[in-house]
Image 1 (cartoon, rainbow, N blue to C red):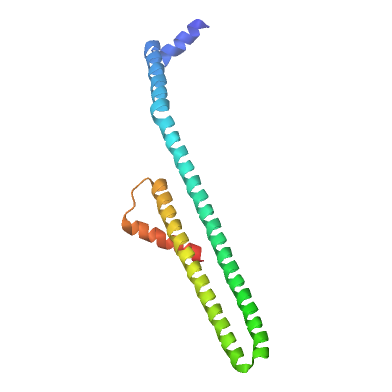
Image 2: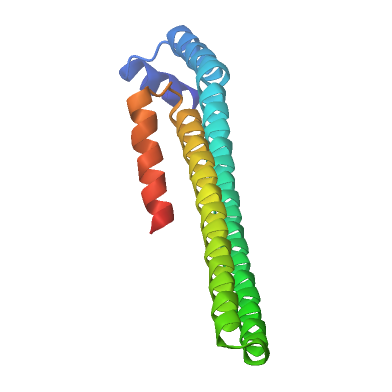
Length: 170
């Protein structure tokens, strides 16, 4: 049987030393690829996955902050409206006792207070929205720069900022 294996190897031109050296070379190439190519690439891919996850978490946090800001501004407006209505009712009650002239004066003052309160609430809401949009745009640009691994030009930053603002507004 050994003779038959030797004969078959000779028929196919098998050189054991050459075959052994090729097996060793193949093992060395596999080791080098594993050490210097596959592991670094897998590490880079894992880092990128983590950056993407971090960017998504930041975006969710900003959305939550935006929702909280909108809720706060709605509460401020509702409180101002409630206070204004209360003041208007008080002014009407006082107007009955003091007369028509004083009633008109009290209603006017109450409406001015309502207007000022609404303006103040609107200004506060706008300020909060601008600040949140700016922060979201900065985080989107930062996350995009991290994910893509390149430095963004001012034009790219402006474009990403505008896209993020449009998504938030929608």
